[in-house]
Length: 199
Image (cartoon, rainbow, N blue to C red):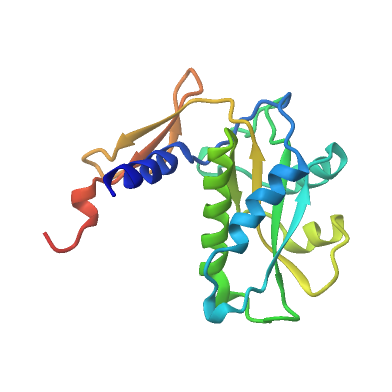
């Protein structure tokens, strides 16, 4: 049991929000399909399964999506990803409103499938980033999606090409991520002791 838990913990530690990628490493359709296969097996509220997936791995598709995404709001005005370090694939998670019109009701499903796909990507030696800062109408128009498919989250996928360091939250309680002069990305994490309510 302990060994299995360590495997999950290692995957969780490696599965970061990557904002820099090796553009020479292309992601295949087969790899994206495998990520969706993992997501397909996830629990869904009342087993409705209203989420569907647009896969973008060809350069033309990827170039349509990248300009519509906004990254790392906490680091503005820094522009990320840096030029030449963009993801080489995307999975656009959509809710089929013909199956279920209430998008807020299935927000937890979106998080479950997105994290599952990112853990699968990590196991493949890839990585990704969940992107919620985009205009759903623009994305739907650019991808020529039917009206009943609403983009609810964009997941960037590629081979990570940056350094991310997990740190403890400082005494002042600041949890904002930041970068140093060498472009190393630091992510403060609350301690386990701070998270468990019943001591």
